[in-house]
Amino acid sequence: MADKDSKSFINALKTGDRSLMDRIPKADVHSHAALGGDFNRWVKKEGLDLKEGTHSFPDFTVFQDLVDNIFTYPYGTPSSQQQISRFLSLYGATYENAIAHGVSYIEPGYDSPLLDHFNGDIKAMVRVLKEQMDSYSQQITIRPDIGIIRVFERKDIEHTIYPCIESGIFNALDIFADERHGPPEDFVDVFKAAKKAGMKLKAHAGELLDANYVRRSVELLDLDELQHGIAAAQSTEVMKFLVDRNIRLNICPSSNVQLCTTESYAAHPLRILMDNGVKCCINSDDAIIFGQSCSDEYFNLYQTGLYSAEELDQLRLNGFPQGR
Ligand SMILES: [Zn+2]
Image (cartoon, rainbow, N blue to C red):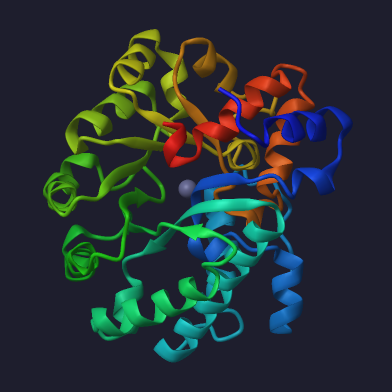
């Protein structure tokens, strides 16, 4: 089902016209709010002498170290005020980078421990975030997620996640970071509370673990969407389960390639998922680390020769709420 921009999108892909591609409306529904910027532009603006990563992270801890550095350099341990300023600068970089590449709809993921830097004052946090989001509202539609960092102890997240859910500012709940920690069983009641509050339910699953873990996460947490979810491609049964429940996979090809969960864009399980009728869309995850914009993501897939321009256009449309 094409829209008024489909013709231009297809034309941009076929001719390699990046500037045209950057002007075509796109959605990014899997983008971590503090990690969506353009690295070089952000570093220059902040006057930091940080070095860009290698764009290959066979070891997840190297990726995590780079993220920590972006959050805290050069302070080591920043004060809450320094940390809030750093995050606001990174969030701003995410919005500017998205707008520069034609993203007109974004679901940025904020992290619930942010509330600790506001000393638990949810009203103050909401005011600051809302003011920043409002400043971009003419150029981009923003529907923020709130995320649970699953490597944290359950008891250490409760005081931040419930006020975030109750605040009403967040569109969806997500759970992220290394999925070998924090099993879905630990978060069933938090997800129930979010559902009761009318929020959409997402979770990172099937990035590092297998198809059964994907299914277990969907069933236990009553998920609406999966962040990644690509391990579902290992099982026709799990893919059918996702199709039956109309679960969309919010896929980030460059993230999967650079974190070595897939060998290359050509080897990415997206093709298998699509061939089995699973609804997917294309997103950037952590553009400040991976160095690939939403526009780049479509070109990278097109260049494999495995996807027609029309199929990629359908993936683009799938990202928008009305495309579901
Ligand atoms: Zn992610």
